[in-house]
Length: 370
Ligand code: PMP
Image (cartoon, rainbow, N blue to C red):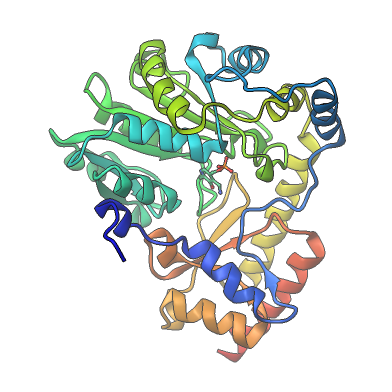
């Protein structure tokens, strides 16, 4: 093969997808792997896309996104329209944000475990991921662990709350530590809040902290709060001047997000998703109860739809544990190694309740046999 971009050769395949495929090869395997809501996109949103298509919204949208959508997002975020860029999911927002600010050799602090996409983008940028191990601190961020990681080379820190894979919501102490570490320095805070819209109440966040606005790049998504994963729409928000430059990168890469999908996203922002959020909250309680009854430890999830279960005492690597659980019990989870932390697995509970019950029954039986 003719050599490719060196950074691309260092990129790794997502373990989440790999385990999902492994499980698909086993008949009747219960998938507790992927963060794919079981709900269909609410009818009014689908209807709006259809209406936009019929109305001829089939041409290029402006590079930054449909004005009507950007205005609606700006209202929701309490920001200016000029600070909003519509992207291809939060993935596109993260890609534009990180690729747009990183130079080769720059360092990015990432609390570990972490959603693997961050590593892929940082690798592609030729930058260096500096891991902040949070496993000893209940998956929260503590000043003593974070401050020593900040160097002259630090260009960004990624913060994800509610967190994938742990479901943890960063507490005020975590946010204070991040603020102390970054405030006033030439370091961007890339805040990935894709699960925030599924929280029933307000959660602590630095997104609106007035002191950090010049440093903050907010990555958001329509995927999870409105069960719109396949639509691929999200947005990036940040300081006006920075956004003006990042727009060039996004425009060069995608020109714009499909116009009729953006039109429907205006309807999404008006959609009440409380029922979905409540359903996940109930399932969270159910999963936690079941796992506790199995004698398992895990940080208490307060958001997203994942629980990160400690399996260290079984003496198997997380990969081996998950492979065996697929083969021997017909239930699939994602090993902690896919997120950079051994001794854990991630269970996703955004699937249907029956699948969840069946999966946990099988897991319980598997643990007894181990
Ligand atoms: N960030 C996190 C933490 C995620 O879990 C995901 C999706 N699993 C994304 C970003 C990307 O979401 P999307 O591109 O679908 O908006």
